[in-house]
Length: 130
Image: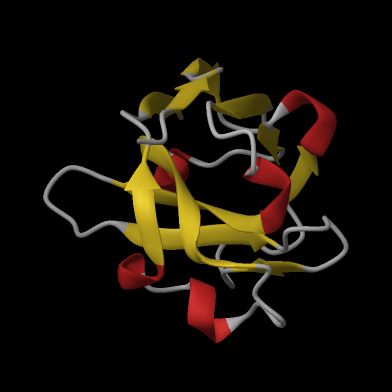
């Protein structure tokens, strides 16, 4: 059983920044791509960003491209989401997920769907005020 624990959410004004963290309990963390999704009230969970197992490959949704940066520290079993230039539309609960495939060769569209992930964290609330 893998546990993912997110942190770093909070209330911020539009234009501000937050950095989310997700710590994994799995010691084989470095073998799996990771992703961030978000869910706003009344909406379905949507893809935000993904990063390959080595950290060299990343993929973003169009809505956050250029504002958010995903990164990872395999020595700390942690994946991060740096969020800059936040907008009220970014308000949501943010979840990290673990890829169900080990050492996925390429990331991209394959990691934009929820079914590609087998474990999720409990989520962290991000609220952006206008």
